[in-house]
Image: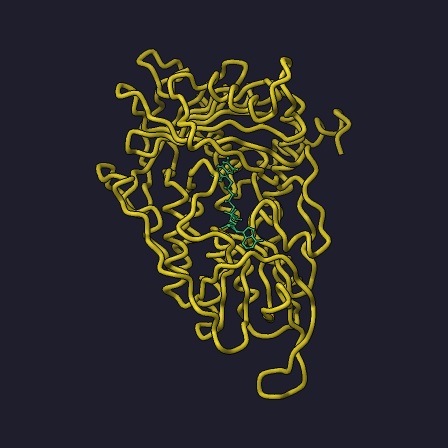
Length: 444
Ligand SMILES: Cc1cc2nc3c(=O)[nH]c(=O)nc-3n(C[C@H](O)[C@H](O)[C@H](O)COP(=O)(O)OP(=O)(O)OC[C@H]3O[C@@H](n4cnc5c(N)ncnc54)[C@H](O)[C@@H]3O)c2cc1C
């Protein structure tokens, strides 16, 4: 398996198009030499009452802090994270341009600075269909140890306090209102920290979500993926993201995303419900590692970097309760079921949650307000990706057909990319056809 196109590339480059590289256009500057932001010791807890307590300092948590403080600059915003930053996060490190739009709106323009834009995505299906068209807008591959530390530095620069704390419990209570006018409802975290609003941005195994009594995703709506870093062969330094789908445990795929420093982030993921032990009794973990090796033989994984993690897919989202505890990012199961992309949705939902949480006192209750704004931004997209995931999961050939057609139809390719990485929706003409197909297949 090669990770780049060959000269006899069957897909061939389509007509040239202008690629928007986002904030960093210099493809020559390099990557891992770019220092990871070193974060000082965690902050002290602020003296007064906490307005917004954010559990988890990944993209969702940092976006929430940035939005809350932009909305209300004097607010007391605390991010509690169990890990010491900078920290690794098991991820493909692919940053879609849509996420950078959210960050730009939040005033962060340097999250991918120094990394080269990757403006091609190569998709290969199990049936042998392949497309590699320049994307309308470039993505970036930035190790999360760097990306998340930059977001955290931006949130702290705006006034958020980072504390190192593993959150274990949440309770609803009340406290005297500032100014002595009656009492206001608060959330008590770990029996010690009280805040008017809590934002659960604590990822795939969210404690906040469980404290709300909301179940984790079932195995058919939970993916699992293993990721590693690998040296790229010197003669094969592609400037494209490569996704190779396989029908072993369909829907499943391996990826290779070049960082730009001679290494790639590689990985393999599938639905939890499809992962079992090997026919030779090998553990599920060994099955994942072996499949990755087999699918990307030219880029053996650095074993020290092999790590697996769950991806809660948006096909099973919890209903956001109306009250003062909000869920964002993976904690709210906002991962695209077709691609496994979650950073953009974490940034967008975090920023909406922060806006609701940092504003004036309710009514409307923060949870209800946030639920409405999230539905307004993503509702249609999420319904369409759920429909597509159901159909694609049952029919591999549908993916073959779509990828084949996208080779010659740039507008179809762009639509697929928007649906897979952003907030794209199915065009009306296709939607009717797919809805009929779903009914015929007896899907709900
Ligand atoms: C293998 C793999 C590959 C992926 N590849 C991509 C990709 O290429 N592109 C993409 O867009 N998405 C990808 N995703 C999805 C993406 O990683 C997530 O959607 C994204 O990280 C979600 O951000 P978040 O802020 O919600 O959560 P996270 O990034 O998981 O951050 C959660 C934070 O909460 C902290 N935390 C957890 N529990 C507690 C607690 N109890 N108390 C305090 N702190 C706590 C953690 O330390 C962490 O810092 C991938 C996921 C996996 C597993």
